[in-house]
Length: 427
Ligand code: IMP
Image 1 (spheres, rainbow, N blue to C red):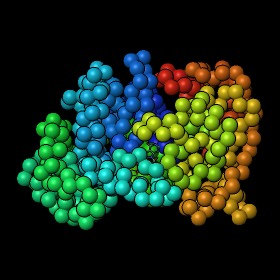
Image 2 (cartoon, helix red, strand yellow; image 1 turned 180 degrees about the vertical axis):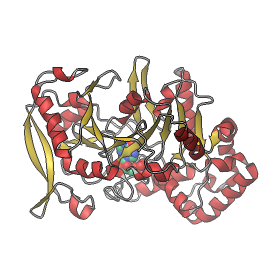
Image 3 (spheres, rainbow, N blue to C red; image 1 turned 180 degrees about the horizontal axis):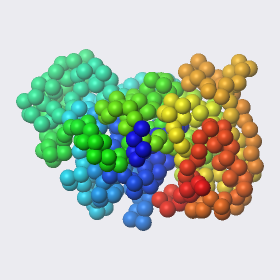
Image 4 (spheres, rainbow, N blue to C red; image 1 turned 60 degrees about the horizontal axis):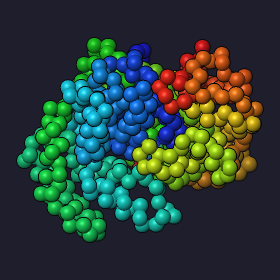
């Protein structure tokens, strides 16, 4: 295993606070790579320079010496990408010469966003409640082999042919949307040209760059997006995203060999949130849940939607940790639990009177699973902003040690606030 690289993956339903964690580990990295997902992600980093919300850009963009790569497994919304870069440029971030997108990275088109909106509008009771960023339709087109890629932008003749092919294949679906522009190849061509012109020198072979970097023993950080429970194939389908968010996504999304990933840090929030629909056994639809939402600022970084909240579900985290091969845990937002007299932790799912510490995520089971709780003492002293493990209240330490024992994994760091400095390295 490559010892110096780090992979950071969320072990819940996303929004575990990965942005801050990735930003911290950027200090040890020379290259930061996004391997999956798209602008559905929302990684928030709060530094002395202000608050940055990243959607598509690797978090390394905030560090001037880091090379940032967007791999073939990502889907890139060209317009969103330019807007994000422009807003960071205004905040003093320089990206030229250190940001690259792979030839095979698929493009999110206006058609994808329209199809996402349409699918979500069909039946609100059955909707997934996606981020409406066009993610599902973009990955569908990739699987159907009709999508457009960043590399297609490098040759206008090829781009026109790919657009023609795309519209021919998608015509039946696009006609149903009743928006003429979506069937207009010239419109799509003109829409893509500003991105092509601006990034012609930034589109390249990310797999080859990584091969070179691995040979030169450069330190690489693989930045996960979303969370393991949202994995297309392994998560709580159909209430998932459309990419591979577990460890396999690193390899299939970048073309690097297994062992490149280095240490795999699983990010776990001290309680659970979910944005969008789908099963959530420990959900609290009560005062405690509202309290967690307000104290934790649990509103989507991408969509602003209020997140659903509940107690920490260690049973699903246990499964997620296994599916990602986590070698250590980063526990985030511990301070949000300050002031709760008692704290519940779900240690198993009970389904038809059988309890399971490695519960299936298929809807047949998880939708009717009852959480089995263990209740721990809370703490009243504030932990917000603490950076020293010894200063944590005993009950908070007991909470952390309970998690370590249950998962049989070390908790390496504990986050105690949104600022990058609010982090404890566990001795
Ligand atoms: P999509 O990825 O926009 O298609 O949304 C599918 C599901 O994944 C929805 O429940 C979204 O709320 C959820 N989702 C997608 N990206 C994120 C994320 O970065 N954090 C949390 N949930 C996400």
